[in-house]
Image: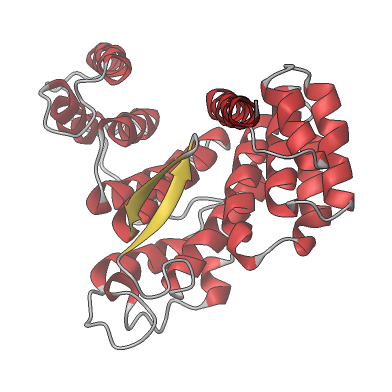
Length: 304
């Protein structure tokens, strides 16, 4: 009987562990565990939010509770509430969690149309990379997406942030600034998606001769991601638009020396990007090689 009881207890534990693995919920009965159960098993986001609040107030896995609650709020189109929650309670969270909160905020700003806030935060994240804070002097860092860990390089992260910044400028119809940012992003870590966005910006500026070779790189599969259906479809749409507008036999309009002076163009940030790309000095401090010796690239310039 005693042996049978031990086997039964062992079997229950194994089934319990399997249950948590299948549903991707943590073990226990704390407010955070109950919130994850409501979110992932019961599919009750409203109940999950209540329990996430309880977890935050009781100090139960606050980092995860705040981030997960913001994600659930975003799914329920409660983005403004999610933004305020992160701003109000991220001070209770660990230093290691702050970058993750920034990424969530960028998505939230993007969804609810807070473009200026998104631009400011993206610039701040780029400044942290420049200062060596994000990578701590290392060439790569561990990132997480959909529960999976992977290594991301400084080039990949910088290019990703610049791509997001370019998209934000596109939403403001500042296509010249968006073009500058996308050009820099492509120089660091090129891909088909950013190339298509760059072409769109060039078309909007009637710079068709410059747009044509960029879109050809996508159509001829020269860039990472060129074989993806979404990228190829968009490239086909852009080439059709380009052909409908561009007539190579017609003379191109020459740009004047004042064309670069555009209201709202962030000149200091453009200069910072130029210096960021041009300086590849040796690693002599906490800063990474890509950002070493960029002394004129001051915080006030990047924050403009």
